[in-house]
Amino acid sequence: MDSTEEEQEAKEVAEPAVTLEVTAYRAVLKNRGFLALWIGQGISGIGDWVIVGVLLDQVNRMAGASGLAWMMAFRFLPAFLFGLLAGAIVDRLERKTTMIFCEIARAVLVVVLAFSNSLAMICVVVFSIESFSLVFGPAKDASIPNLVKQDELMTANSLMSTTVYLTMALGTMIATVLLGLVQLIHKFFPIARHVGEHQAAFFIDALTFLASAALIFTIVFPKRREREEPFSARKIWNDMIEGLKFMWRFGLTRTIMGAMIIGFIGGGSLYILVPPFAENAMNVTGAAFTLILTILLVGVVVGSALSTWLSRKVPKEKGFGPAIVFFGLDMVLFSLIDFYVLSLMVIFIGGMFLGYLIVTAYTLLQQNLEDDIRGRAFAAVQTIMRTCLLFSMGIFAGLAALLGRVIPKTGKSVHLLFFSKTFYPSMLAMILGGLIVIVGGLISTRSMRKYIRPYREGEVITNEAASTSS
Image (tube, rainbow, N blue to C red; front, side, top):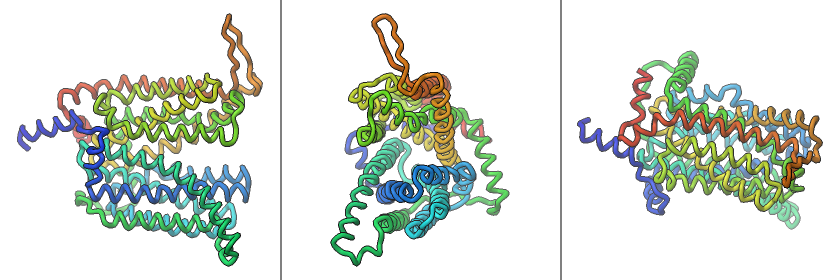
């Protein structure tokens, strides 16, 4: 490559030409390969969240709250057991074939789920579905840079992330409508009662996975560099260890992963603490509470969509750390508010920061990691997310219970001059979670400073990765 081409490549990295304009999204969606992947994920994502809504209803009827806890535990368990190993497998196999196989396997397992009539069987099938999801996710994320140009990655990730969170909202809503529709069909067409209301949803979900597999089949991926070593369990294990060492030595990856660990441990407190906080501080339950979660997801969708425009205003490397800090500050502010309408506004802003963070983290990893390491990197991201969320829920549930021994559930009022504030156990625990996120953001901001100047001067960060791996 001559100096002119190197300068042009550096310029493209230094000044990503991504915008929020319709033309930017249109340019990415003209890519038939990415379009097929995007549509497929939208279809299967809706089906997936339909199942989440339906399955929660089924397990709740079958075994109550304890059954739901067991099912969720089996959903997180694969990440503990072989989340990182899945990434090493992805880097060894052809990603197109891997994704198609995973989608077909999940379709078959969802059909099996339709005929599962015990909690134990449901947990086993859910575990199996999640295991294939652990392989599919890194394969998909690692494939995006092979389908779009480097300066289109932020836009592509914005579309993917926005779609993910839209399907969460649409899927759960469709699940509600579907259950009601099947009940009406049973009422007017008794012959259809041999297909249960939950089974109908499972069959539809299986079709969405098959549709996704068919769309992925049409994609033409660039040929990857063939591995000379034979495929074996020992090589897979060595790949996983090598990938972990690389991600630790490569400063940018270490910074992003470290920020995600701290951020998800602190931010995961929202999952377990918002329900008791909303009930105690604002007397909010039922539909009013679920609206808080809905507004948070809407914020994530908006933040994901705005990320392409923001990256043009603020370099990703410069905005990543401060966005974590602001998300933590938003958590603390939300914890101190006991006015419902204002809390919705604050949680929406927090969701926007979260959406921007997800898109930015994925784009930075995709732009700065070689193709042979991406599968392991994104498997590590999935493992971190699931593991830290699970640990966070346990830690902060215990902390809230511990604080509950000192502060009554109804709260304790503190009077300072003209100021009076009631504090609750869940509130104090959530404030601590926000402070942890802030600390993680400050650390990552400091660590990211070394990557801001190279981008401005037109250098390519991957040079560090190359020197690290050599």
